[in-house]
Length: 123
Image: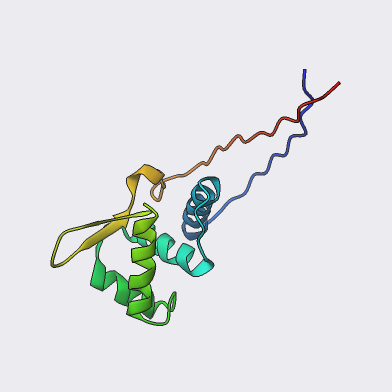
């Protein structure tokens, strides 16, 4: 039987941090590179729910996640190409976090990740 060094951590997080953590873990496990600004933008969208693109860009710029609405729009386009965001509609496009990420943002949230690395022993 393999000996496993186990680490358990119990942390209480606010909604912004736990949402950001979920997105970060998803991106890390799927080798999707995201900057801190991209991560903040995705977190804001996850917490905002489905939003009209122009309205979201203005909100994110006003919260100084990016310097301008155009920078937010560029980040949204990049995230869409990485399947992190879904964009729907033609004239007033709506955007939202891709539901396949399974990001939880409501109610009580408990994240239960069990990640293991087993070292093979060679004789």
